[in-house]
Amino acid sequence: MSIFDTNSTGEFTAPGGELEPIPAKTNCLVVAEAATIIAMGEKSSNPGESYINIKWIVLQPGLYARRILFQKVRVNHPDPEKRKTALNMLAAIDCNSKAPDDRKLKHLNFIDDIDDIALARVIVNSKMVAMVQVIKPKNGEQGYSGNWINKISPYVDGTVMPGPTPGKSPVGDLDDDIPF
Image (cartoon, rainbow, N blue to C red; front, side, top):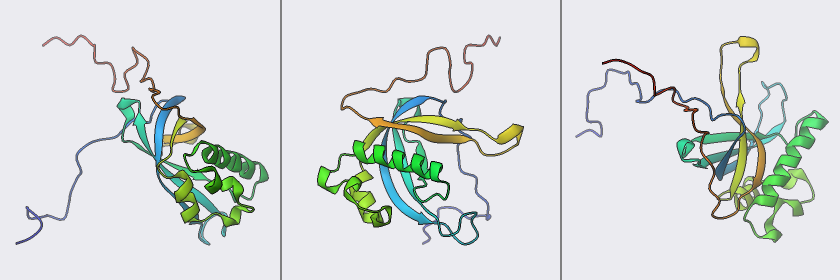
């Protein structure tokens, strides 16, 4: 007996469709599911650079619940301004995490002291409020669109994230007059 119920033709299309990005400036309650350090390969534009990759799961608002957001925190970026921005984001994430104070990343002396275990202890399972923005293709080009995290704020237990504003359905206009 096979683990497959059907005879495969070698092709498969998963059910579902395209999801529109979460609207810009939407505050979402998120929880970190994973945080790892990724080393960029020699073929990248910045060989030897590494970044922190955080996988966030949206909990609220309900319309966007269970969506996944990936965040690159480029704490080793060669551009000093971008590096400073990334370190400020990491400091905000560290500050808002639920880890005991003596385990926070702020107690490390060098950014190179951060490893996957330290990240997991501090960031994973921490709820925060993330303001998301929309990634758009440049100059009308065809391409990827999605979300990026612009801001991290503390989550206060019991706070409910408001959904989309009334009158603007992310699905489209469902109140059109179609005669049947």
